[in-house]
Amino acid sequence: MTATSDTTPQWRRPLGAGPAIEDFFSGLARVRTWVLLARRDIQMRYRRSMIGPFWISISMGVMVVALSFLYGGMFGQDASSYQAYLSYLACGFLAWGLLGGLVSEACNSVMESEAYLRNVPLPLTLIACRTVFRQFIFFLHNLVVIIPLVAWLGVGLKFSAIEALLGVGIYLLAGFGACLALGPLCARYRDLPQVVANVMQALFFFTPIFWDPSAVPQRAILVEANPFYQFVQLIRAPILGEGISEISLVYTLACVAALWAVGIGVFLWSRRQMYFWL
Amino acid sequence: MRLIQIDDVSVDYPVFNASARSLKMAALGKLTGGRVVSKFSSVNVRALDRVSLDIFEGERLGLIGHNGAGKSTLLRLIAGVLHPTSGDFLVRGRVVPLIEKGLGLNSEFTGYENIELPLRLMGATEEELARARVEIEEFTQLGPYMSMPIRTYSEGMRVRLAFAICTAVKPELLVLDEWLGASDAAFIERATKRLNVMLEGAKAIVVASHSMDLLIGVCNRVLWLERGRIVMDGLPRDVIAAYNKAQSLGVSQLESAWDNEDLAF
Image 1 (spheres, rainbow over the protein chains, first blue to last red):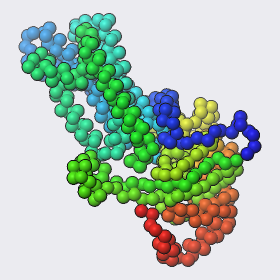
Image 2 (tube, rainbow over the protein chains, first blue to last red):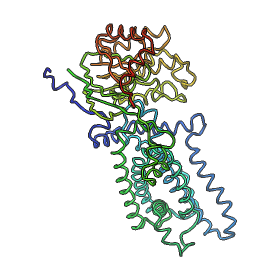
Image 3 (cartoon, chains in turn blue, orange):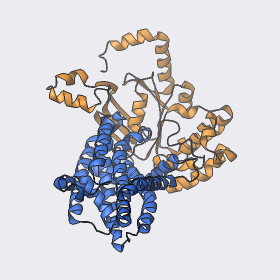
Image 4 (spheres, chains in turn purple, orange):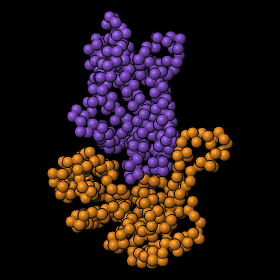
């Protein structure tokens, strides 16, 4: 072998067989690829429609307004508590939209990338970033409806509402862990997405979104122990001017840690064999 | 200089039937102490069977063999999308895989809009992307169609675009399946020219094909695979002659010859 060390690349194992840490960070580093994939997903969904992704905003607006008509009847003349309830509901939907979207799309993340994964080596972390970023874009479209609505309802947005951004950051971290964990598992076990969908549906009603936890004081522990409640609070509480409680913060960060631990475990276990599950 | 080192590699594809793939069955298997497992466990198909192979700089390796002989598996192994069940695989340099036609192309988007994603998926550099944007329009001669959604394209136009996109990168190791060969007559001349530029830039090429003409024209080494094993490895003319001779022997005799060895299950 001639000495051309400056131009000769080193021997390496391909993605998935080399050091795991390299896979992990190379996926994160390909920012332009996952941003493009996420943007394409959204463009795709609203291709040939006139207002495009703003349908996301509109459908959120329509749902909240429709519900407000219905629930308006229950509150009768009590306008201020009705407005408070409507703000509560809108923020709950906003938070659940991101949370539920992250979980259900985490399940699909690997399966929807099947065509790519069959042809080019892509790290799981790239796929996770694509999914999380796409859900974040959806969230922003919902945000532009909800924030003006809440302001208009007179709840009085305080500057502390900015804390919700911290909450969103925690969601994204959790979503990334969920993608690493659920993406490969759902590709391997095709019943799992259905299981997750059912659990999420049940939790939607278990989580205080339509109702206030004070309505069920004797079940307070059930509410508090529900991680989804704590996640919803990360976004809802600051927008409604209550700030993020320490319990919510600690609880959700613990969830993030757990999701990442499981996610990294699944990533290590699946990276060599994921191709065969597609 | 060696660029690819495949050392005693086997690849087993698990064939999942619906039951092996479900959680219920995995759980049931555990509950019944493994008795059900044997019944529902997946069958493995051995796609590559203890293959060892070195590919050197300057080699243009062609793969021949029947459908299911392991050509695609070997291509995907070298491309880095699938991993050996046993054995080791090492590579040196930048690998660009062109395995299926139309990777990352989306029929709802225009020709222009479809340039970026396939290239990014293949790991193109910014420089390559910038150059591709200029070159592709010129090369495909799609004119105003470049601003039309590619669902309006004919099959030939799609191939042109897909071909132009994936030949815009400069690989050290090129892995390709034979789809690049297929196109309309007027296009082939320009395509061959462009492909040759790409091939000259590459240090080594691995191409799978059923077209013996293409293999003789492009390759300087041919590997004959059958049932996941290397049958013959040598100069294109020698290997192709032996392959054709085996073909004329008839499939049934060939099959019985293989059946003397243990089945790859």
